[in-house]
Length: 239
Image (cartoon, rainbow, N blue to C red; front, side, top):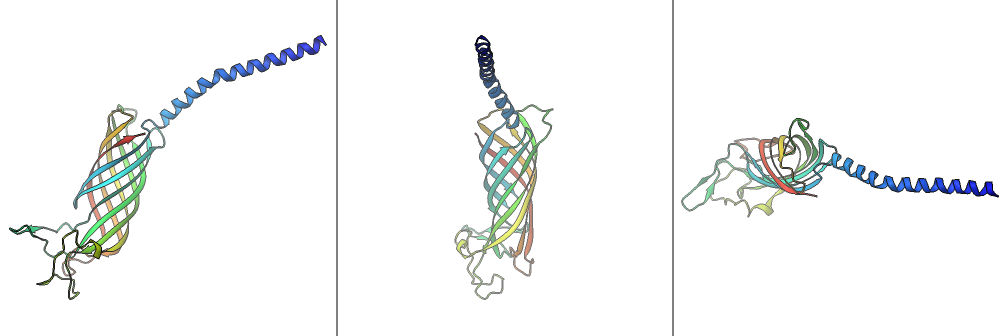
């Protein structure tokens, strides 16, 4: 009986030691997990807006990003802007009426892209300036709608035919589908884990499967490819 009691005591002592060791490791494990998470996601998850400037004018958009590793982030973004031909020139008369010679149609472009941002020079530059390379692609929805009321369906603005403004003609349009992408260099500024701001310089392009007739047919054939340098100002919130 004394031997059995001794064995039970030893087992109880071992069990108590294991429990104490496990409890002692919990804070360390939690601290290590938090440290690993910070290394993996140094800037967290962000959601924000962007203002774009292209050859066609201004655009507005939004973005979402999530850091995959210490130097790479997943990105999803969407924007809305106009598509124009480089030869379009607007003239205004003394009454404020606008005239764009040889124009056939307006175009709105809604690209939705996903991709990655790869941080550059992470080991050499402080965190308050974080340059990156972006590669993204995705579908583009185009809305082509008429610049004028083509009464005789010849594709040319004739005398007496009404010119539409960019808003009144919207319901008369048709959907166009394309595929686009963006290659860009950008940088985020500041160390804040709550707010984000940055600037991006890049080139954005879209190929429409059906051609877009921006100018009158005798001036230019329907265009499939649209590309433009772009400048984006981004600002948002980190979570």
